[in-house]
Length: 208
Image (cartoon, rainbow, N blue to C red; front, side, top):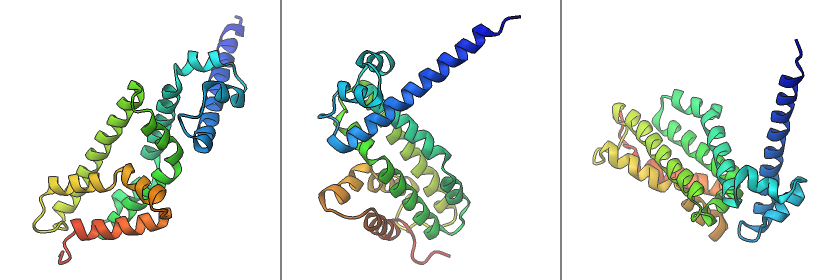
């Protein structure tokens, strides 16, 4: 029995995947260097070694490239071993610091794409992914504050859902970009400030 057809099919799939990876990598580099608005499809195509028509066929638009890269970032965040470490931690203040460290790393590594996404909010694919990311983060802050509530680690005057909302609001990417882009803070300064603030805002200093 001939195996040439499956082989050719697998080869085409591998080449298509390699092309997508090259385009995403080139786009990330150019977005970081020039910004979303100033980067053109033609420049991305030239850097990736493909025709502009290929980018349109694969991603549809610059916004489509950003959406694909954001999906990569979400996948990386879900698989990060640090998340498992955070969930396993039993001390609430240390758990909070691990959470803040994870948020800092995610924003620091993804900053060029995040800036591009904020500049491409009019693109429906990017907007949908951004909204999904916000929903996922709110769900995550609800889960972690629920753990703290069960351990009686939250401030006595704070309900669990209020704590989740405050944690969600203060860990927004906009806060990170204001600190690093507008104020010139280092990511480490942002992490220290956020950890101190959240511990004061959320946790009971007289926890059992």
